[in-house]
Length: 282
Image (cartoon, rainbow, N blue to C red; front, side, top):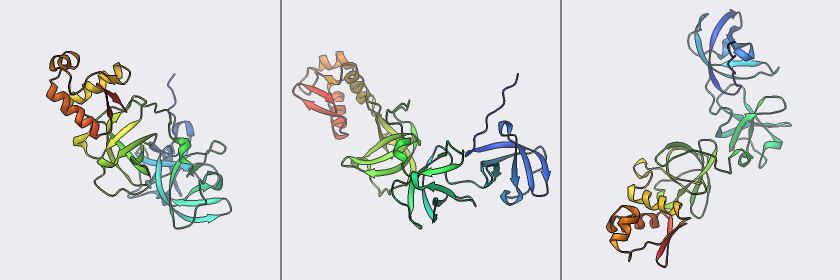
């Protein structure tokens, strides 16, 4: 038996046009049955029966799935920095690029939203009525356990969040916290700004260090060897600048010169610290 493809509300999908009516076209919504693409939501030339069209799906005012060719600024499961266009008795309405504005209920507002101001929000389906809603209580939607498989040098999407003593926190790939250290910041970054970044290092606890320079993503081979040895030995390695070249070569497979250069690099990045006759992970 063929499995029915599941189509998610709040996401862009490609669906087939199955019939035309006076007020639009019906698309094969698979598990959602047929979904209306109203004439007013068509961009460019009208499709024909059998065409496949890319659309965004959401619920209309009568809780029916409806499609639009408009592209929203954010989809379900994502963060965005959006402007409030109206506040009424049920909450704030945000401009997310569609004719129908996005609701941020009062219960999902970290602070009371005001018209004309922009807020960082997370978009999801309300579990009670399946409508798409925005929440500025976004911390609860970030994986604090760092369950990821990101690797050094991997390109990621980030959204700039708060400033700390170490640098700027950022939301990575709409799921995890990352950190841009002050010595990696060579430009002004604003709250809610979206951009590309690269994983510079993944700490032992899964925390993500970021860089805006792809050429600096990851450490060189000597740095990686030292970090691997630190992980293997519980975060402490009894090698230092007075260690014999033969000992360094035996344990790490690199020269003493390469070892000292790599240690200097890791110290500048606040990745390790020096102890008496040893180095340790920070």
